[in-house]
Image (cartoon, rainbow, N blue to C red; front, side, top):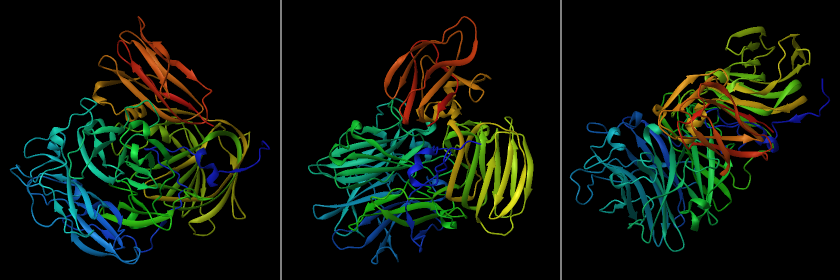
Length: 640
């Protein structure tokens, strides 16, 4: 056993040593405190999905206001379906109690020149300026359906509207013409970003700014547009894409933005992953006066931003859009957070944290909601001593010797762990009622080595695990020596795998042992997500030489794929063969060279590009086809 000093990876200063990913999940060290009276609102028939919200602190009359977007189940819309709407809640006691005032808009409304009403109005944002309360909102025609959302025309249109009021609770007066119609949209990326929805209105020194979410339908890419105007009712500029997957820099996939908030001259745009396990968030930032410029935006915080508490009203994690924030006069970030309860109904909760304290000193939470969650340390161990104190509800596996393959199971929203992520490791399975030691082979076959009950029935406990160079394993907990025996020895990553409907809170995770830079293998499907491609334009082939055992070949000339990763090095694998062409490699936006993948006969996948001296941090690898058909295998990432 090595004599390396123990490092407690449950301390906040080591938060970046844990892998976090939009599909895998997020071990969060955030400092949010959830209000004991949550939820402040729960969806009910016929609008069960109250899954969006906007928080507003009134600078004039005081008090808090929550504008809650309400949808029928499944975001249903169209003829014969109840319309989505937005309801106003008010609190006069700093959020301890709330009163439901009623819908933002009363009565039916039709835009000037339209033949049908525009009364689907779910999501809003509000700002006070120039003596009035200004509101922008989503609108959809009464006849609009999901089919028309990505092919809008005539009486099946949607877009952004504007309204104003003398009071934050309304009544709000709708402007007779919309700010924006999706039928008029011309995407800067042809065939990709088709629809604008979910807007935040912000007042600047000399004009107005709209930050608006956009999506791409079957390409599963989201982005953020900026529009500017001299008056809130318009006319507004053409939308400009300021955040998206299109750049060559690090930008996590599957992220939906809405709503943003401003503080001390900066605008902050949180975003939530729409993978199956809704527990990963990011925060982007730009100077408010430059937020219409793509180059002004930076990724302020990658993960470790939010955790759901172990309550039935936060059963699905953040669900819908992301949290809505406002920094109070007392310097606390106060947020509304949307979720869904165990029955599937939407819920709105309230939470807060000190604005200047993002990470707690000790302890993180990893949740499994509708899907499993997973995280790994970016160091690999051949032997180790581990002291861990944690609370588990559900089923969690403490992993070591992990050598599987990471990535999503498919290209799309609600993506979850690729099956290969759950292979090739050793683990302590930790349940409330007992423990098991298991070995999982590279094909996913599982063998239970030992098991037993805990000496007392308590979700919180401290365990001690020792794995020696010979494969000898010793498990103990709270003075009880549970098991000593041999397991197959393998060097690999250490981490956690939590099953759906599991809550894991870790207080201590102190490891000593012989460690080295971990190498994690990534499936090619992760590059589909990061680039937002049309998966039907790619042919998947089995190839044992590729990490993940598959390669992808673009059926059209050219092609572009991307990986976002955190680490110190990268190895790209690809096949060579007839019809394959030259490929340009970019790393963090800089061209690193061109590689010829053309060959007279098919050559199995192997390493085609290696860089192992990157600075510690976040990076992006982009591969672009120049000639022929782009072909690629998976990726290997070198850890810290």
